[in-house]
Amino acid sequence: MYGRCGDSAHAARDAQDWRDLLAFSLTTLSTEDAARVALERRYFDGQPVLFPALAREWIDLVERLEWLGAHADRLPEHRAAGQHGLGLEVLRAGAAEGAQARASELIDVARIEALNMLGERERAVTIIERRLSAPVASTAGRTSADGSAA
Image (cartoon, rainbow, N blue to C red; front, top):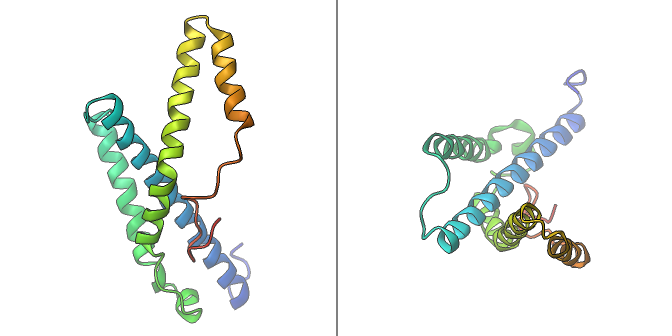
């Protein structure tokens, strides 16, 4: 990957791949966070469910990725292509769109596990079948660095 550093087209593709991966990571983390907050409100009376150390690590990870996103336009390949940053607000908006679907998925996973533990496999299978027969989830919340659906 780094052997052809003099190839500007290769460097530009690598830079775009890096931006897309960063955008996907930020969107995924933001979606997970929004889903967790929604579940905390609905099932835990708004109380946080993450242990304090894990919550701090989560915040640190998001801050590091957002810092990278905010500084993405400093790469020469991005400046040459006229790209500026990742559009963090667009990514956050996309994450908000996907949060409810993710929360629903997490609820179903918890229900399936609970039903299996109670020996009610038929009810668990009903949930699994419903999920498998549902239309494929949209790419809401999954965007590339240029704001297009990933």
